Length: 183
Image 1 (tube, rainbow, N blue to C red):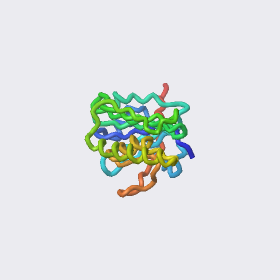
Image 2 (cartoon, rainbow, N blue to C red):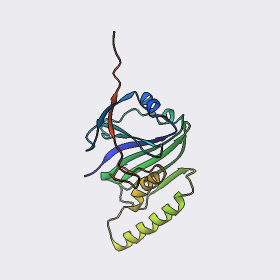
Image 3 (cartoon, helix red, strand yellow):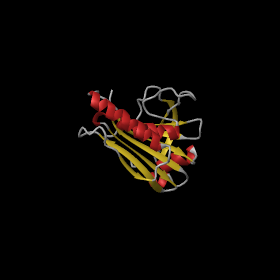
Image 4 (cartoon, rainbow, N blue to C red):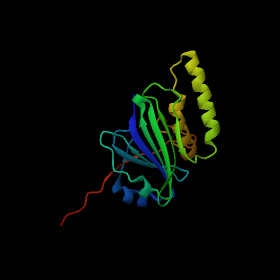
């Protein structure tokens, strides 16, 4: 199955404030199979993950605005084209971004903008070496594609293609837009 969606990890903002900023409300309905367009889970390390499962109609997520109270790590995934981007916003400012665009077949493509935490450098070296080795062996591997997502997971404790983590299983619930009441 190919995934095409975005997910956002927030730290330093309460779930209530985040829902308000998104114009959403939590229905409380557990999303065990990933069938809802909008879902949210509170992770045990104070990160909150918001997933959007339909890039055909991307939500208007104001990343800078939603990061004003803390940190936002946004992950955009187009798995079928081997394209992904990870961005980090802190207190309303884009701090760094890492993107891989393998659509044209360049397995080593990687664009890094801004000042990325130092833990990224060894991960980058390892992924680059593994990708070069795979390319030389004629293997179909995508280490550089996974690198931004692996790095985001190293910071937030969450990656979209995993169900279980050392700390347990995230419990995503459906969230939906708040419908204004009319008089």
